[in-house]
Amino acid sequence: PGPLMKGKKGLVLGVANDRSIAWGIARVLAGQGADLAFTYQGESFGRRAKPLAESTGATIIEPCDVEDYESVERVFDRIREEWGKLDFVVHALAFSDRTELKGRYCDTSRANFSRTMEISCFSFTEIARLAADLMTDGGSLLTLTYGGSNKVVPCYNVMGVAKAALEASVRYLASDLGGKGIRVNALSAGPMRTLAGAGISDARMLFHYQADNSPMGRTPTLDEVGGSALYLLSDLSGAVTGEVHFVDCGYSTIFMPSLESMKA
Ligand code: NAD
Image (cartoon, rainbow, N blue to C red; front, top):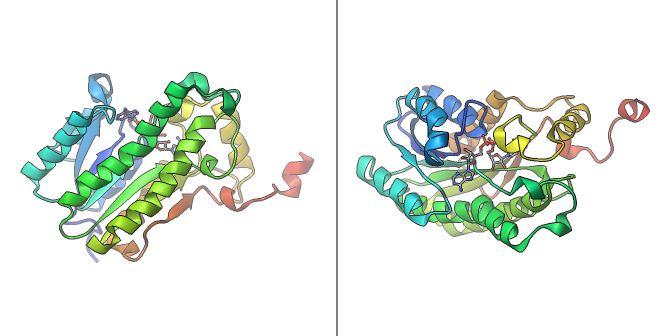
């Protein structure tokens, strides 16, 4: 078989640098022949993001801040003009005030709760609606989540609540759009060393705990996350929708860590 994404056109949101999950996914997709469009969150992120995007041959590279609806709409206008259609979207962005990614969840402020939900959850719903209009041959929408959505992870706090809402959105969007042949899934990645990951207090400790207590004794690589995203975005997963797919070296399957780790 030829490259899995040949002839497919997709939008990638969330590249900040070469450690971003969005970039890990984009480079696997580009390697499989996809045509990619990219967004970056303003010019300070653009300095690192634009050269990465250009290295894939991308011609649509647009600033987009999901708090600003006009900038979101402009991206889809540009795609409509240049491509006239869209096959997939990778939504790999989230934000919360780092001063609230520590301590107690119940101390979350009203303002940061709303902002976290708007950027980290609502943006996917809005983008799904705009993208669906351009998905004339069906399509695949993918967002990134973390297991702190359905079980408690220290310091993850309001982001865990936003991820739970994001995962629920995936199911509602899958139901809304399934009839148009559009699939909607979330990839739940194990902890990765990224800019956003470093915003969580004691991230290093959480990272090592999850690595040490997962069946595989480690966390996933960017390429492994990219490979699983390739499956969810390509026709290989043609009958998969509304799912949260764990790519976490098995951590989410463990109720109690191994006897060895208890004795250590
Ligand atoms: P990252 O810092 O590389 O990427 C986060 C991106 O979000 C950045 O590109 C940033 O510009 C973008 N962003 C934030 N606010 C935005 C806004 N208002 N408008 C547009 N873009 C905005 O970090 P990452 O870890 O690659 O994060 C990507 C996704 O993966 C996030 O949804 C994150 O929650 C999720 N995730 C991360 C981990 C991890 O351990 N790093 C694990 C599971 C899921």
